[in-house]
Image (cartoon, rainbow, N blue to C red):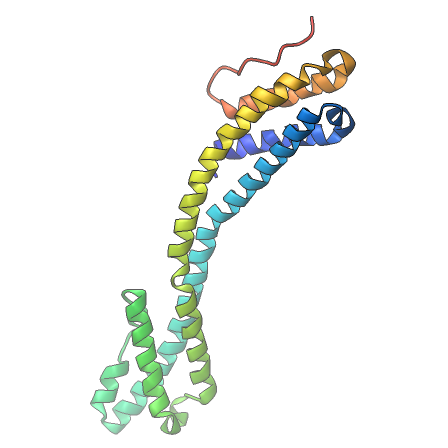
Length: 229
């Protein structure tokens, strides 16, 4: 949600709060009561769409965190296996695990998973001989779990990005509906309170002025709801 949309939402909330605080007056006009409920539903939808939008950042952070965790664990395994392989002159094994820390997590997510799995396999095959090189079953198990966790979340940013794009489109379509609800229904019905409840009527004018300002921050204010002579 951009800054202008956030300002609009805050303005809608001001109107919603006013209508809720004057529910007895609102209830005297069933059509106004219905419109107030529709406003609440729109605000709930906007908040939901905004949360979906922000999920893309959370998914990216989760993937990055999981990648760091598996990278550290697998690099430790690779170091222990490499030490063992070099000591025993097993250059084939050494070639499987000779990576820099950055090299462990280089390339596409598919390449990372395959590379980490091969290092884990190499450690598993030689685990009985790796104690002197600092590798244990516990470390091997932890690396497997971290690889599984990364494999689970690595697709989340792509999925979240698609969902965020859809939410952005839905947000764009919802705000005009709220504007129409207020201008074509609520504004017209509030006019009936100008004499019967002047205080409520005037407070609504103030709330609507806030909405108009948030809706068109760089334009002239929208036409005010007519006041009593």
